[in-house]
Amino acid sequence: MSDVKPVRVGVIGTGAISGAYLGMAKNFPIVGIAACADVNIDAARKKAEEFQIPRVCSVDELLADPSIEVILNLTVPKAHVPIALRAVEQGKHTYAEKPLGIDRADGKKLLDAAATKGVRVGCAPDTFLGAGIQTARKMIESGAIGRPVAFTAFMMCRGHEHWHPNPQFYYEKGGGPMFDMGPYYLTALLNLLGPLKRISGMAAIEIADRTITSDPLKGTKLRVETPDHVCGLMEFQNGAIGTIIQTFATRFSELGGKQPITVFGTEGTLRVPDPNQFDGPLSIRLAGDTEWRDVPHTFVAGYGRSVGLADMAYALRSGRPHRCSAEQAFAVLDLMAGFFDSSDSGRAYTPVTQYVKPSPMPAHLPFGTLDD
Image (cartoon, rainbow, N blue to C red; front, side):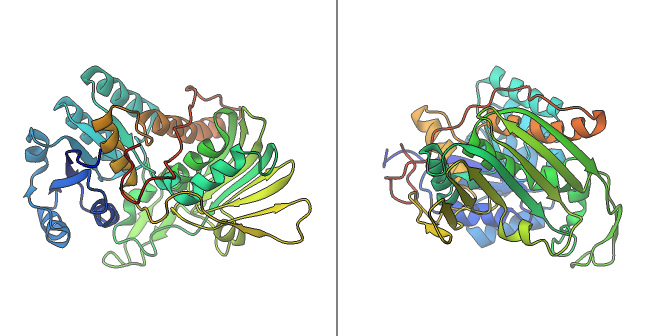
């Protein structure tokens, strides 16, 4: 498929995350960024100039353009589903920044609309497609640490108002540590350990009033509207039982910084890379080892955000399933909401969907190809 026709992509939303997508997209010949739009047209023009995007237009114009095949939806979480539904109505495929939606009803509405129209929905995160998590998955599936029995998954920090230029949405519904960072951790865990049996959670707002200390909104007061601290237990169908913590209410966490995910098996332990990155280091320690050993990557390294979009573009041309699927994103959305449901009810929550792992990444193809 080396001579495959590029997929024409239109970008809606040119905020902070768009640079990461657009910077990596140029490495994939299958992705043709044809236009961009934003409610702030000046922001769209600035990104178009920076990344040589040929056309800047309004959101309405972009959605109406029949030459655009895929909408890359980089809006704030509460706009993900409304924008995606408009794209689907126009017969376009969509790929969105995480999360899929801010609640299950939103996510289900989008999946149903896409099925009716016969179009695809993709959704971040795509970090699990990086060499780090893919190598960790291969090791676990090959039995390198025996049968997985436990794990920890910690994302522990103070919040984003200290660095993000416009952090309000992180503390609205659809934000918070679970909906912001949880998709990385949950998607990685599902790919490493498979489908879940049940979860339980406790969630709270620990720091209700915050002050932005980053420019340009320095000094602005924020009222937190969604839990900023979530702890959960997760039982996988393979028998592994472990703990997840996602918080914007802590400082100086060694565990949250140095050991984001650790999987403990009957024969050894694997330290998994940061699921918010693509190529982080792995290390393993088995029963006879006196210290931790580094594990070399066995998959293509160097990818960044847009590899999931490129994978979907190749899938569109070949007809195969794409890896950052709506079904996977909905399974993650269901789990995130499930932790809140469990916290409210005091009971364990059983997932509503049966998760199926996507196929592993091709380890034999050159950087930027993905046409397996």
